Amino acid sequence: GAVVSQHPSRVICKSGTSVKIECRSLDFQATTMFWYRQFPKQSLMLMATSNEGSKATYEQGVEKDKFLINHASLTLSTLTVTSAHPEDSSFYICSARQQGTAIHFGNGTRLTVT
Amino acid sequence: AQSVTQPDIHITVSEGASLELRCNYSYGATPYLFWYVQSPGQGLQLLLKYFSGDTLVQGIKGFEAEFKRSQSSFNLRKPSVHWSDAAEYFCAVGVTSYDKVIFGPGTSLSVIP
Image (cartoon, rainbow over all chains, first blue to last red; front, side, top):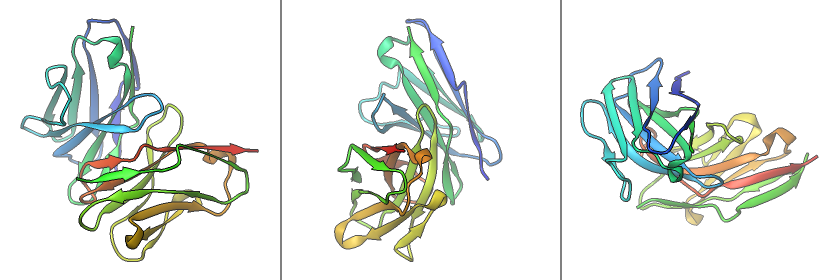
């Protein structure tokens, strides 16, 4: 079956630093990927839609300068949390669109900012 | 705009008992509906999905869900719960089968041995 890999699965960084999260579709091309954020014991909230070769579309209330999304190839989208602060600590999950058929979720990245 | 509600924040059942998790959606057209399960600290696993056709959908791990258009509901059921079913369950709605999905708030399931 289609596999979406997220890396790293866990990351701890210091306040003020930036951290990059990768989302890869391993066995299919994904022109569109989606990034979600999940606070503890809460649901997943869509942050942005990432389109290969173009700018991401951000949901209302999501700071595009803080959460930089790059979708440089058909199999890779990255989310960079810039100048991270403790309130950015969260679980980030991506999903990738397998053209015309389905979406597949990654296993998520646990970000802790100290 | 689409939205999903899951009226039950937390449910506790005994192992071997039956289970029903409720889900109601709001969408103007025929929705694409999903149920996902998330174990603590883990990613999402798709249990089942409904796009069209038979309104009773069979999924993995013995789960099934029934789409009722008149009630705007898509409740998840399992006849006999196992301790390993303890997890967070999310109902979700999408415009298509391969687009972004909107998640409900989730229902946390605890299973008593």
